[in-house]
Length: 246
Image (tube, rainbow, N blue to C red; front, top):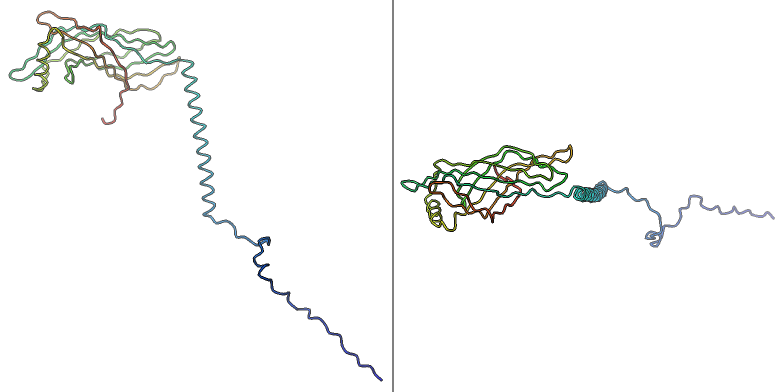
């Protein structure tokens, strides 16, 4: 008998693997190709890093400024200049109220400017000096620029005058009323406007505006001869003069 040969069953070489299950599709441990970060996210990161860098730079700069200021104060111990009224002589004071209000005055003022600093000099520009009664200008004067050396006192002499200054009726009436109270004297103040800078060794700073106001002065208006105002209770204050509008 002849045996029949049955050909062997050949596996299908092109058979595809079974499709992935749902567990395989949603498996978080699987590595997948992620898209690169967008430009929007990159810009946010850059801005954040810049903000952090700016914050630390500002903090460092502020610390340096504070340390420098503290070192300057310890080394030089700066103080404001000190002003005082030495004397005020009223040579002429004439108020006319009819038909209009006019004021003519002449005053001689002596101020002392003291520099209490031992290593700092004050550089003063030209001074504008005004004598006032309330808001009414009584007399005007000026003084040239000067240098106030460390630990020294500079004496300022100026002659102040006003010729036929027109006054408002209300101001003239109030001034005339106070002039009649001769036992008390006329309340007056001295205002000095100037620019000042400082000099430390060979270095100089830019000048800034200051105002010196001296109050507590009582002046008696002379009838014939000149009189000397009472300045025993005069007190001078120094402050910065900042112009916002010209």
